[in-house]
Image 1 (cartoon, rainbow, N blue to C red):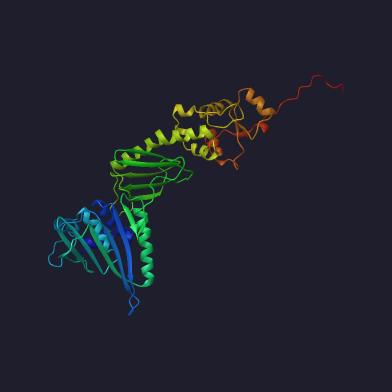
Image 2: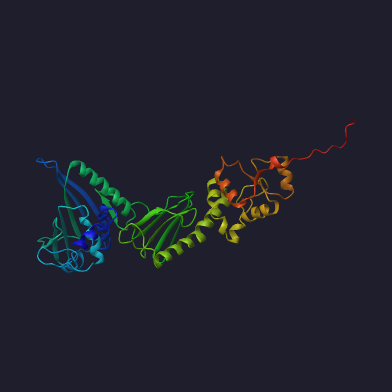
Length: 394
């Protein structure tokens, strides 16, 4: 009993049993999982009957699968068959986290059809079903007040959205498709696929970029953390697994492989895409994204003209670095004038910039490149002398 109690309470979210049931359906090869809520009020008291239905069209279970995997953690009403933990069963025990009144599992395979009836005390009976069943159909039953019914529905939907929004199979909640697109919705997002792993990465200004890890589309972990500065990402991989408490990803050699692929995605796809975008239209947001990448720029990108100047063409990162090193200052102006023209004619770079308020992206990039060197307005430092051809008599 104690081991089972510990397992039931291991999940950080008590509604996470829904995720486990969806995962079992996906593992059973079901292309669709339907989750529906049913509530029947009781006239005699304030508690009605809440029924949660989880139906799939997967391969179903034979008696052997039921006995060796599904129920091996539970005591049968007829026999004590509590044995060692199977991976399949660990997730299933979480159905008792919210103390249901009863759980019915109807399933069948290879011409045999079964009902497993789990009681409130977690004992079970295995019964022969007289009719065929496609896949597995689960009824999870609990007495709830009308207010609790609304809360259970809302929390169930929130939990399913968190864990199953990118599931490989279609997940329907009360007939509505829950699945959302996996790729990050950013105009400069890139994707990469290799070794059973799929990555979507995009530039961001967030100091703590968002990340997500998924296996078969099911969420393993999501959050905000600096792994690659200025990059948010999502990784879907069959090699990644969650911790026993289901609230993080296991950081093993497979995790390291996924991180190496992320690094490769940033270096070979995201950075070149950012530089190409800056080269074609130099918008302020793109230039700001580049600020996170100038420290590790390969030579071919470092020489691309991307920074707007008041000269005849854009300047490259390399040219700006050389300018800063040689003159110990970085000059800018909003528009050209006689002083700027003289400076440009003398080979100086004057960046076309409206200032930090109007163009914060370029501000971030220039600050990153300049380091401790001052960024100065050209007209405040330099002036054109007026040459007098004849001195006045006085």
